[in-house]
Image (cartoon, rainbow, N blue to C red):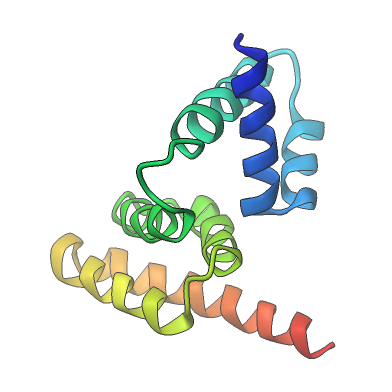
Amino acid sequence: MNKALYDQGMKIRKEVLGERYVANAIAAADEFNTPLQDLVTEYCWGAVWGRDGLDRKTRSLINLGMISALNRPHELKAHVKGALRNGVSKDEIREVLLQVVIYCGVPAGVESFRIAREVLASEAADSAA
């Protein structure tokens, strides 16, 4: 493992997904899936999200489209929250999901809109409190 990339990945992962989300993922890791957590932290968050070629907002927009296309609701929920942290607006999230409907199909888009609405409502309620 490249410790520098892992540390950079952990920092970025927490900034995008939130301290609690990452802490829960790490705490839930066991002997079987700890290597997966390490890999995701080092390569996904350190080696790729840590590159200078795209800003975090752009990476978030791309992720929303890809994760929606793959119909991965758990990951989409986390990445909608991350996109908001990265400066993506509600209108921009909607536009990405409309692209998903056209290019990936109505079922994937409908599910993605449902999940995004749930997250947006939760975040609005948290902000109001």
